[in-house]
Amino acid sequence: MVIPISAQRRCNIDVLIQTIVEKIPNPYRDLTLNLKMFLIRTFDINKPGCSIQNLKGGVVGGSIISGILKLGEKVEIRPGISTKTKSGELKCFPVITLTQSLNTEKNKLKLAIPGGLIGVGTLLDPSLTRADRLAGQVLGHFNKLPEIFTRLIVSFKLLKRLIGDSSNENGAFGFKKNEILMINIGSSSTGGKILKKKSKFIEFQLTAPICCEFGDKVTLSKRIDKHWRLIGWGIFKGGKKYKN
Image 1 (cartoon, helix red, strand yellow):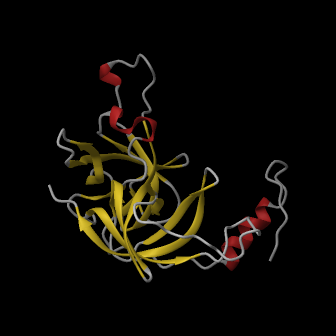
Image 2: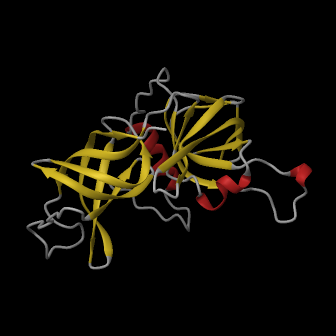
Image 3: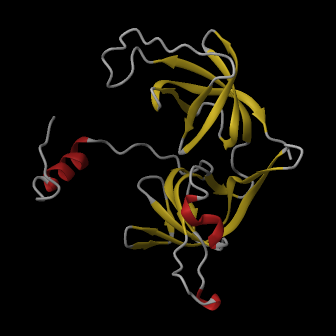
């Protein structure tokens, strides 16, 4: 079904919405699962020159994938703040806070469930959330989130050709050891250096840690002609967990 619309002239928008409501079934949501929210944006809502007494905590926004988020709950953001010591050792400091407000569009909520985008007001120092500093991370209830990984093993499948490039019909996407691909899991995006490749499995050393769990979907991109191009996808099968 094709519905012609014009958002600028507001033509057929009502027909589109009606069709979505009537034709597309609501996905099943298991609200008993642990809370898992992918962060897409994080920002500081305080205006320059705001007095200390009127400062508000940082805001994070994204989509709830599973579970329920309520006001006043203790939540955790992983991997959090990542740094390296002088010896090159990786250190991750998950961010812990309380939910102060829940908003979608102009509506204030007492609880939020999967579906749509949610803005979450917190007690975090605004400097931690400004300029999307925590974007790509995962929010959940305290001590209920998946593990943090520094290495990933991915079961992958390549595209037959580059999307939008009919000249590459054979999909010659060769991999070399130590080559870096772009890896996306949920809203996270990081580089992955190829350590091993066997049949349909690749092991990556991540340039930045990721909070994920077995079975998560992965997309792979390769730098071709100075641009990152999608070349395949896969499933996260295992890896090396970060240890404090």
